[in-house]
Amino acid sequence: MGEKLYLQIDVLTAAKQRISWLFDEFKNIFVSVSSGKDSTALYNLAREEAIKRNRKINVFFLDQEAEYQGTVDIMREIMNHPNVIPHWYQVPIYMTNATSFDMDQLYAWGPGEEWMREKEGTAIKEIEGKYPERFYKFFEWFEKQQPEHTAFLVGLRGDESLNRHRAVSKNAGYKDIAWSTAINKGTSYKFYPIYDWGIGDVWKYINDNKFPYNSIYDKMYANNCNYYNTMRVSNLIHEKSFKCLTDLQVLEPETYEKVVKRIKGAHCAAIYAKKSHIYHADTLPEGMTSWKDYRDYLLETTPLTDEKRGRFTKRFSKQRGNEDIFKQQCTQILKNDWENNISVDQNKDEKRAKLLDKWRAIL
Image 1 (cartoon, rainbow, N blue to C red):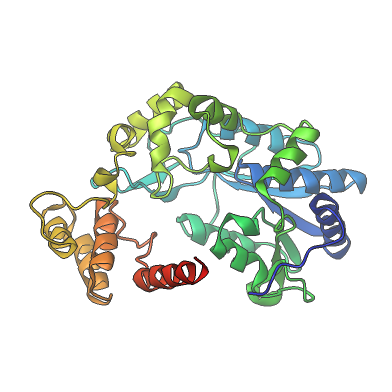
Image 2 (tube, rainbow, N blue to C red):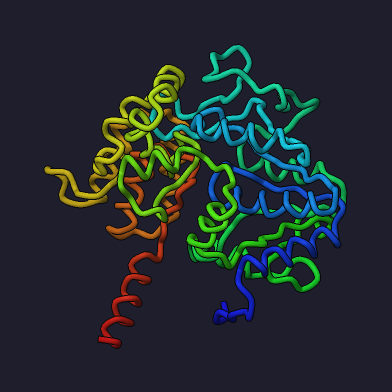
């Protein structure tokens, strides 16, 4: 990755110019939204351009059922705008449930199940034929259903993480545009028009224009008196977000009641999710002499099916053997991450050593 090159215009002007150019290039434009701040800003940028041109934009949202009420509310606002063609999917899909060994997946919108809420009138409720009933694979399938030469706008920002910076800048996908990637064998493309925005840019744009946004952000801030760059909006139960259940009973008590009724393990996670030793290998338990011993103990005693225990064992046998890796493997077992959604970093020790050497040289 190269060094940052600063433009002679502000990021808002640059984003508007990028989106205007995309409207010139593509007749079929999709904006993927999640109800988070970034996709909210991107949606409004694209919607404003659509209004100028008397055009409509396609807006895509895959509803995971276990969502904040604030997410549902802002989706209703977005999907009912006259310049929007709604693609609000509420179809059966399996979602990872990191809060339970017994019910390790939620069959969101599954037929015959008692959903957390009724489906929306504007939502797509059924799909003819087969489709992948998993979250990320559904995105890939959906993209392939659209006409050739379609632009998919995504609200990724490079400063969120190194992986996201690589995703939005590694390979130019369309006409040497760095903030794009090719999909569907180069017939359609993803674009990241706000890739160079900071979090302050996002909130300033929303605030300056008085755009509606997910109300859960205000509740999170009021509850934790926290910095605005730590607040995340996501599905309530997967392995990277289930800690939010601890605060959910305060932020949205009615949603919390529905989650506990619908999903096994949610109440336990609400009590213990922020106590790292329950769901995360932080401190070696008493009586254990090494992380390897603890990992083997968890493999033997955790209530896993034979298939899942076999998956863990097979995967671990192919990984390097040191205490740091054994520790990460313990976390995978505690979170029942048999799908390997949070992969073990086998070079973590080497990265840490290089970082320490770098700072020693500086200091």
